[in-house]
Image (tube, rainbow, N blue to C red; front, top):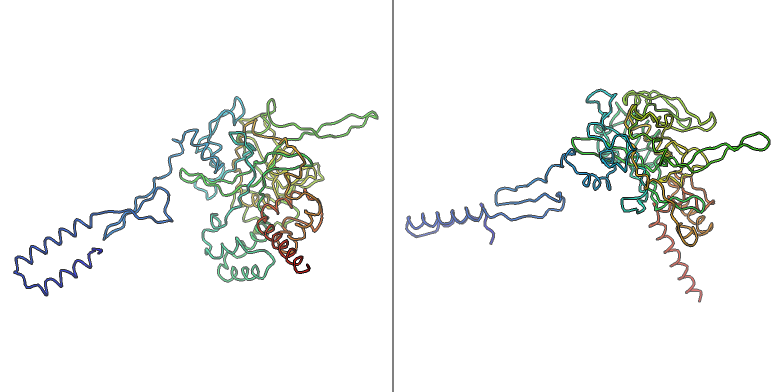
Length: 485
């Protein structure tokens, strides 16, 4: 029988009404029951509630539920180097704080402090002054294992820009595809429910969010018959009260290629490319600390009043377009400027969309550029929108973990999801038939190279659905074969 306050006093009421005992006997019995209730109510037992933190515990008695809160995060200044390495595994935003000489240029600063993460040019207390970027160029972990690539796209409901927007609208913005009836309905809803900022939200959807692709997810980077460990990312971070928050991360490619000139017999010169990693004597190529000094634009999108307003909100930006050698456009270039502590670092690099034919999108996550940091189309547009003027960029890597070609036995096809051109085209036809929105985003035609990075990314994101389709197709084929027999 469960004893609580209500049942105790019901019992007392009935006893007082119907008992024929002497008054003093009733008094003694009442006192005894009260003492018993008091004793039982002090008995505390734990409850298990699934949505609590790992260190939260709930205790209860008959009157009150007590929650012992989980401890506050350990102050960043007190974290040991081992603890920082542990944090880094799941959240690379902690990488700049790791004071390990293997990560930084010899003779330069070894690691940074929490206060160093903040923007120096934006006013104190500015909404975006706590934003910073991390260039995490390690493709191997501390044990020498391939880290693999797993992009993490930002969640709109976690961004400051949408704090004042109704949650249900933000969730729809995050998930509804451009060009559908649901998208048209969302636009109408935005115009009705948040008319004061509807143009700003629609501009974001049309200029940025509608370019969202499938996140790059792959074990290796592949170029021809060469296989490479993958893991290089640009990480978007916010420093918040002794906690570093990873907003998202995009696959990137750092420097591996240099351009040389070969003098021909007829006196002319010919360019050629050769491998030249920023290691050893050229370790100074990338500065440990940089700022994003200029935010450029691209020809694929118009630059209008709402983009001007957005740039002003973030402290700067313009509509100028940068071209490599005045020929090849570098879309949404964010200029990287090394700080004065790194006088030997390359001044003139940036972050931009993969634009040069010899820098394959299939190599994102692995060193493969001539200097700039390459990202996908969507990543370049989102970073251009999210990064504040003079946002800090910390670049750290161990020279032994920067680049790794995988030596394999057998054929390169053993590491590919498709073994033949037919298998690749089968997937191309499937995604164009059943996932046309994704096919469009990934620019996947109905036929083409089965080693193409776009279809490999598409497969790794949709492999469960595609494999189930193949399974059902084989099952139907077998059934038809049985019926024919």
